[in-house]
Image 1 (tube, helix red, strand yellow):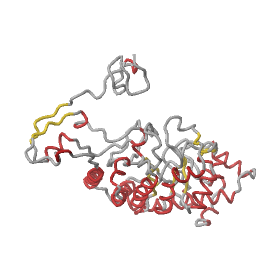
Image 2 (image 1 turned 90 degrees about the horizontal axis):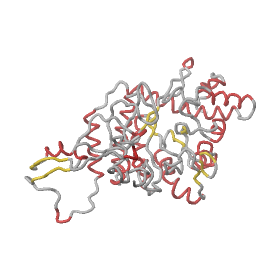
Image 3 (image 1 turned 90 degrees about the vertical axis):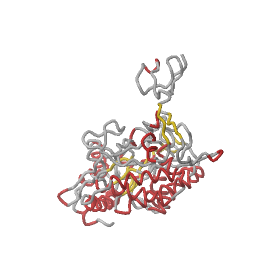
Image 4 (image 1 turned 45 degrees about the vertical axis):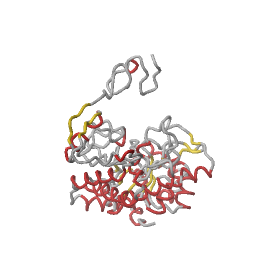
Length: 411
């Protein structure tokens, strides 16, 4: 073990308590022997570090950060160098903000178009997903910050995501759902990986020894730590036994006491616990050095925004250009129509919501070109009240009496 001397100074209680969160986003510290805490923060297309009251759903605002195009967009570029550039900017910004682990990229397979988090994932192609995710990870980790690819594994739907069981044969599991993760582990060497909520063939991913030990470590050579998705730890003792390390967020000490009892009663060997602590400490200590170095630097808001713009430009896909309409000739009269032109939709919701330092829109940007912009009109009302949604703005897109965007039936 790399940190045997340090671990030998820790009590059983300190070792067990290190394996779950101090609060929503931080690990615990053992200050008397110089073990610092470590902050984790959401991605995947920008830093979502919350200060003050924290919540997983992103209801409370996070600190302003650069917002990059989503994985679904950047995957269109098939540009590995672009992914690495984005990763470098993300890693630098994380270090400056004191974040040791950036919870990204997401590379679950787009098995169904109904998955509400598809925008966070790269592709339905595991090879493309793996290659693009690996490029992000290399960039993020260049300065010592840890990337954390997620959600491991076979977690490709939001419906009953925390209770579903992915029943799957070994060949399909490996060829489709694990290929991307195998690529990132072997090519980019992430320092951490996030386990998913679901069961796989009846066993929770965070307690799945076949997944976490036999495949991830023994076959692929992963040497970082595994962290549960927030609330995805169902049995902390079995998780540690199977190859999981950090349980997030905090449980207030309940599961830590279960871990202590399991060791004292001989249900979990202490040398196994020590091994997990050693693997976790390796990342806590290395990222702490990167964070200390990062705090002395600033991140360029303008350069980050320029990177986001460049990423968007390289990811645009033009399917047809009938009559060679584009590019527009100088002096062409142009009317801009559509609510998104003024109030763009550029990201999803929930745990990936970025509080952007700057947002461009088509109405303003078109003024930079040698075109004759004759005017703007919203053209439609983006949201309308729906009697099934009790008239709440933002819920329901149809007129009263007609079906809305959710699961209501026509009236």
